[in-house]
Image (cartoon, rainbow, N blue to C red; front, side, top):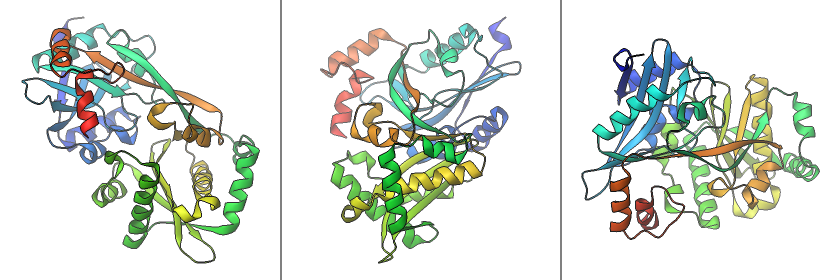
Length: 349
């Protein structure tokens, strides 16, 4: 087929972006324009690359950013699980023409490299990106299969987890955050939590970040709070985002003095029940810190389910010569960070 019969559209406005998502139907909140706008910072442009071939559609969301002190650019994905979404694509998809079209766009716009976290719950991402850069397995994420009966789901819990949830339910009341004070209480606990685990600065989201997520019309975000029965004090909270049939555990925090009550476990259990009643399919708890599956965070999440999904990263170098020059100029020593020339930027952040 001639390349002239195939179109590649570059979308940077919300109306056209949302129109493509509605046409594709299957996507996650990480693919929406709203979330890209929430995530973007100065010198980054939320961009949706849309490839069409008759009724087949592929949409690749990226943040395109300037490489400082150069005439070059690179692209990355938002925090979370992004990657391409599609309509009409199957495991038999021949991606040769897709690669040609997208590579031409990257080359014409001086884009040196592309990085994207992939979404374990979106079909055919690996088929779309096959032989286009490299796909690297970063670890596992934990899924609760919401198509199972709630009783069976709970049977898959570790026995100690059931005991902890029972204890927490005796001591807590669960409510949906619905006032400005509810949100402020959660943010205070969240910052306290980030201080406790010595999180990197970019995890300290401001109130505007939470306001935008909770008010978006493109996905359903809910903040559940756990209140101490005796005092009425908010002791923990979890932010969940639902898009189509996927529920994402986005953020959570527990007040230091109530860690032994373990409200985080109760909040996940509560959302599991709610989402099952709503007829959702997947409940993604995420993985360990940085995607690993051998730390305490992953152990906590895997106590709920042993239904693990692969978490993969897509890495593409468009111009190897310039890429190597940038690495050399910045004296990068990292062997795993991608792109390597931004490793020092990460340290400074």
